[in-house]
Amino acid sequence: MSIAQAVKMALKNIYTNKLRSLLTMLGIIIGVAAVIALVSIGNGATTKVTDQVKSLGSNLINVNIQGRGVQRSISYDQAMSYKNIKEVKYVSPILSANTNVSSENITKKVSIDGINDEYQKIREYDVDYGRFILPIDVDYRQKVAVLGSNIVYELFGSSNPIGNYIKINGSSYKVVGVLAEKEASMMENINDKIIIPISSAQRQFKSAGVNAIYIQATSEHTVEAAKEKIEKKLLKYFKNDDDSFRLFNQQDMLKTMGTITTTLTMALGGIAGISLVVGGIGIMNIMLVSVTERTREIGIRKAIGAKKRDILIQFLIESVVLSTIGGIIGVGVGLLMAKGASSVLDLQFVVSLNTILLSVGFSWFVGVIFGLYPANKAAKMNPIDALRYE
Image 1: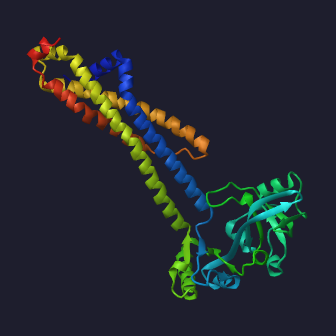
Image 2: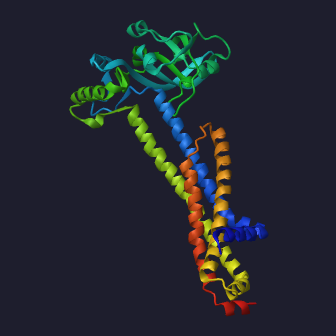
């Protein structure tokens, strides 16, 4: 019997028992669809996170200070001294706090960042109207504030807030600018922030030090050199205790996030892959039933000259055809699921051809492995016993 004849017979048998064939393929369909959907969603999430990190700039260096003993932070002037490093272009120390902010009869808890004028250049924030924090604001501890778009709406509604006042823990601050609306990222949401001069923040929150610094290197090629020099200064200040601070750039973040998302995607894909094994067991079960139902047919074929190899190929190909069709249907269902989930979760629809080929290939492999035992059982039947079977 040729392969083409075996495939034709397999398709005919599948069509004859449509409902049973569909139920048999269901495990494979669910398994492949789950793998395709989960891996696609994982890839979409990875792409979104990567784009967000890259949008911060490839030459951005973050410094987080944990401190040691009584030295829990560094001063503003110490942080600004990093600008003397030739590989450094901009430096913006940050003092952050969550506190109550009010306007007329509205009060809410808001994230506030105390920064200097170079913060805008580092983070590339645009001002919708009004102005940003100026050097004079920092020098003279001016009580001025720049609001995120969501804060403006919540505190002032549709009114223009420029020139009006808000109260931060009872202290009045004049609104001088509104930040242009920007899509929130996993790192932050500037639409929900209030920005004030860092000198005013230090007085307002009674903190002379800073715990975080944004530093922009002159280019992405000078990042490592800048990091080394910054780290050297920090080690000197904290007496060689490298647990007192954390220093990382966007490339470090990309590597970390890439490792996490890849591991998560593989784990999800592996869990979904279990369904393929379950589907394979279902195929083996149905093929065993099929062998039993067609015992007399097997006996007749052997009686008229069919060889053991012919019977083996016939049932094995039927198993493979079942699993492969199930795999192809599963790919279609998985792509539809991934497309729908990407729209709901606001993720990029990312399809990996390798994942599709691997899923279909694995479903074919499942058909071979789980169809081998029933096919072998059919091939080994004694033709006389098979013909006598009722």
